[in-house]
Structure formats: C-alpha cells, structure tokens
Length: 256
Image: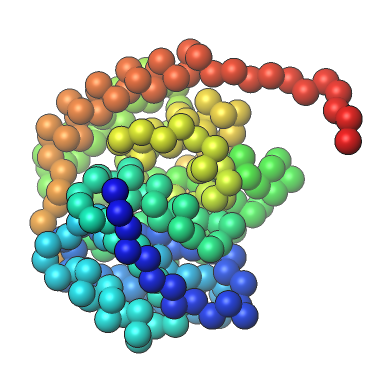
C-alpha cells in the first residue's frame, strides 16, 4: 500500500489535536465539513485537520489537494486503493501531528460542535491517566434509515453482550483518544468497530458522551446489513480470542 502525503502545517505552532477524517467518495461533503471543523476549533485549541482518502474515484483527491493550498491547518494522506475504514483511520493516526486524536466520519453526520465536549471530558480524566481513556460519542437520536438503525442496534447489542465493552454505541464515528493509546492496540481490518473492547483489553477506560447526530445530506452510504452485521459477527469472535489471550503483567519493581 502506497501513500501520498502532503504537509501544509506551520511548524511554529504545536498541534495539540488532530482531527482525522477518513473518506471514500465523499467529494460533496468535504468542504462543508472542513469549514465546520474550523468554525468550532479556531481559537479553542491548536489543531490540524487530517483527511485520509481511501482510494476515492469521485474527485475527492483533487479537492483535498486544492484545500491544502487554501487552508493552513489542512493536510491529507491518500491511499493508492480502497483498504477500508480501519486502515484509513490507522493511517491517519500514524500521520497525525497531535497527541490527541478526534475522529469523524466523512459523511457529515457527526457534528464537529461536539468535539470540544469530548476533548474536555478526556482531559478531566488526566488524573486516571489521559493515555488510557477513550471517549465515545453516543448518538442518542439517530438520523439514519430504518435499516441502518436496526442493523446498528442489533450489532451494538450483540457486541455489548459478547465483548462486555459497556458501550451503547461502539459504531459512532465521533471519538477522542490519545495517539499513543490507539497505536498500542492490535491492528486488523474492521478494528474501528471494536475500539472500546480493545481499549478495555489494554486496561484502559471507556466513557460514553451523548452527542448530536445529523442526516446525510449528500452522497451515498457505504454500509448496509451485510457489511455491518454479518461481517461484524465474524470479527467479533476474533476480538474475543484477543481478549482471552491478553497478557496483563503487574510491575512490582523497576530499576532506572
């Protein structure tokens, strides 16, 4: 897998938060979402916006290239093919400049206005170890089709019972966590659906925060019953295997 990387960041300004947005054929949603992120975060925190193009064929890549010439805090990474959301997310986190990561879906359904709330919730738990906390947005009122709502509800229920991740909405694209926390997790296809269980496996903490959810205005959904439910069930057994084989040593002494 080859990547095209652009860097349009002012090195003099340290980045605290990287907003990572994986996209696949979302050309209509890119500019409006980027503008919203800027409106929310400008003057609030030192940030960058980092898009990951996962092999789009609709003109998304050309638009991302154009935005790097117009927006100082904007960067992108591009895959040479379509590798899926988990791989795109991992590429974004690895390429990020910030110690903190906020992820958003590229379809505009996650509300960037919720990002500061999740970041503040994460920082409030610094005493318990900021690098061991995952904050997940809980979409209380879903703005999706009935099929998408049902398949997501079933998948969340099955995952919660089987993996005991105590997270009512693991599929929410809006999450905040430290870069180091993510990079310590096992990487595999579809792992983005199981972040709470994987963080708990690594002795971390998961917090759910109620967030806004919006209807998709442009473009087409990339997910349906097959790739949300049936594929997810197969992956879930793999995560259960990882949970059973987690090694959690207790450090009783150290020599510096």
